[in-house]
Image (cartoon, each protein chain N blue to C red):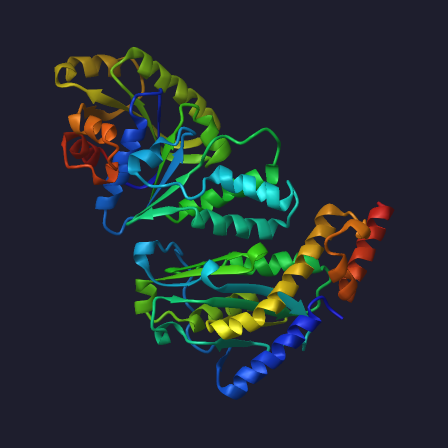
Length: 246
Length: 238
């Protein structure tokens, strides 16, 4: 488990849960320092991890624009201030730090602030051994608002043809907009009755390399329903599979 | 007359008094090993000591002509070093003074700030927020076990400053004593006013002094007036 991992896919396929389980895996890794970035404007990762958002990147951006007066402010001062406030915005839990990107910015061009923010996130991410990005379906937003390269892009799909087709279209956009080392398909919520042939059939619909498949797990539903932190998730089959894949 | 002559002159008696009371320790450059650069990520669970931030900090950069610094080439420590502190938190003041021949004050400000910003020490996180004059430092257990000290921090900054062509002499003052921090705070406030006025001039190129928040400081600091006049002429000539 290393580098920048972005989890992406059609809405409702379980990408936030998978991101949260990857964060849970970080806690097991001694000596590893992980950064979780919630890049989905819905903010689901914060809830899944039960880690509060101190200040989102977009809150920070808004404050800088208001206080510095749009594009004004010395570059070095702004860079240092953004760096300080970004670190202050991290919510920490053991060897994991969490950052929320927040809702998309309002209209207006604040190029200097945006580019300094992206540079600061890049510098921040560089410090960590592993970065997990819970991305929204429109992955191009990740490039514009978070980071411009990804080591491993995980495209999540359920056992639906639509899910795989969406994954393919995300890949197309992603490779145009970001530097990506590896793109893989991860099938989620595979029930016992659909293991085997169904997985093969769905995987065969696409030329996307298949990372693996995650079993349907009642504990995921329970944790979500009862709003428990996935950082406390037990060692059930889905967690064991995550561990074997990453 | 330079932008910070008064400020630097006002630091001198405070340091002098501290010396007479035995409250200051001075170290020449190359006194002690240079702490290696490296990964500066320090999460809470790795933190042995936390210094500064909103709990008590001061950050100041000032520059002047050669010969104007109180103790050029020296690092001064006002207050306890890390291992002398009883708790795991300390206030922190970081004062960086440089001297040389500076033709562009605005560029000098950015250049000195860059040196501080780019100093990434292994197992030590140092972050500065210039507009709030804040500095925030986390020292990891590993760094503290390997004898990292405020002296190590000062040495590393001195070394990085000495490596810059634009710097003739450098001086770093680290303050971990709350009383001295409070005494130095008004000076840092004045530096902030001067730097804000300087930034406004360069970034906005608006010379409507009657409607400017920095009119008072510009009237006080002779060199700010000169810079303003030069920029105004430049703008009119453009």
